[in-house]
Length: 352
Image (cartoon, rainbow, N blue to C red):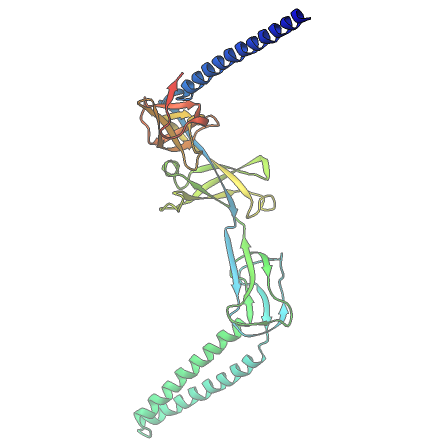
């Protein structure tokens, strides 16, 4: 029995020694793995590409919004209630057509009085002209009579203008896009009454970069597409190029469309203009994946003494996979092409 207990104790001790040996080996392996990981974490593996000069077509596209040729808000120039309506929202009007009429009874009475006053002043002037020739009146009386005629004419002219303003007319030809009047509504000077738009011809307004605007000229033919009609193309002509960039350093270009069904494309729709220029251009091109920060804040990472350095650049998209470098890089420069997800300013990198 005693011998059996000794064997059990020896077995237990052997098992403890074996477990301790295995744990020690595992610890050694873990320490080795840790050391290797620490060595690897000292740098980020990357690949690089060289900035190359490449010949590309000088063609580009720009998105914009279709606009009406003319868009006018008709304002009231008189006081009074609306007594007659001749045109409503959706109607087509020609320049000079009467849209509505306001109450003119009081003004007509004032016009009649002003006309009578003018007639009397003119009669007095004729009589005074005969009298002054015989020295029956003074020169001042004659001059006062002349002045009375001028005053009466001015008053009549002002009242005629007020009378004409009671008939609100269309300042341009086009469709009434909005109206703000109803029978009996009181209007006052400066009150908006209607909005008229003329869509013939229709225009497309786009914004282009400084490099793109250098290739655009007035009178240039442009291919236009409406996003709502992807299978149709239209021809347009560049009518206007802004001389100054906006806050985003873009230049406005307005394109007039030719032979367009105005019912198919309406103001406010989105469109795309494709500009085609003759010839090709030699420029610096890099892979789009090498750009950090996207198109809003583009930059690349260069390697200096094994350390990543961020460098802002100015770019223009050329295709879905490449961009044109406008400034910030020179031909032959090496930039980080892959591994950018782990790259930041000042981190140690290693080219694979």
